[in-house]
Length: 293
Image (cartoon, rainbow, N blue to C red; front, side, top):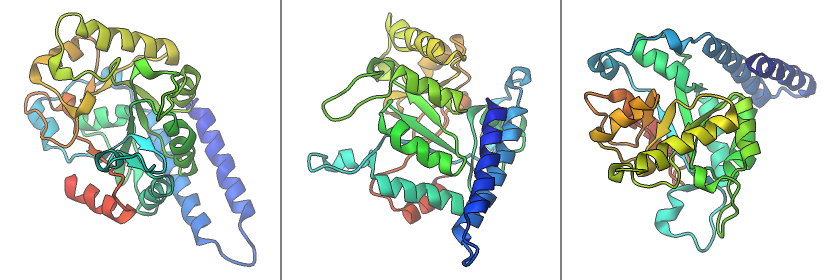
C-alpha cells in the first residue's frame, strides 16, 4: 500500500506539471508540486520505521523532546442556525478547513503518523521539517467525504479515532462513517485509533467498562482494518493515572488527551493535542500552533 501511495503521488506530480498553463506561470501548482515531493519523501521515511524494535525511553527523556504540534478536529461542515456557540467551536466550516490545510502546506508543514512520533519520542529519530499530526475524533462522515479528499490534495495523512457505537449510523444532525469507509482510510495509509465504544468518560471506568469501552471496540476495529490498534484518544480529552495501566495491559502504545499538561510518569499516554476551533481563521490556527507547542 505504501508503494501504491508513492506511485499515485508520482502520477499526481506528472499531471500537475503537464496541466500547468504554458502562457502563465502557476505558483500554486509549483508550490503544491514541491509539497507533494517532500511529502512523498516523508512517507517513504515513515515506511522504514520498525517500532517493534524500539525500547520505551524513560519519562524524563520523552518530556525533554520538543513537542510535535497535534491538531484535533471533529466535524467539518458549514454551520447551521441550530448550532450553538459552544458547538461551533467543534465544527470547522468547509472552506475554512480547506484554507487551513492550504496554510499548513504553504507554511511547509509535513504530516506524520504515530509510528514516526513513537520513534521520535523514544529514540530521537529524525522527523520531516515542520512535522505536524492531524487527528479526527468521533467517526463523523464528513471526515471521509470532505476532510480526506482535502488532505489527499497535499499528500497529507491523518489519524482517525473511531467511536464504534456510531459506525454506519445516520443521525438526526450528523451521519457517521461505514465500516467500508474506515477500511478505505486505513488502506490509503491513514491510521485508525480507538475512541471507545460510546464516548464514556475514561475517568469513570470500572468493572465491565474496560471490556465494553476498550476490548470490544479494539477487536472490532482490528477486524475492520486487519491491523493492530495501538493508539487511543480519551473522550473529552479526560484521563486519570489509575487507568493508564489498563491501556498498557491491552497493548496500546500511546494515548492522546487535549491541551492540559502531560503526566510526568507516563508522557506517552498523555500526549497533548489542541482542538482546531471552528472560530479560528488559518492565521489564528497558525499562531495557536506556534504558541501551544
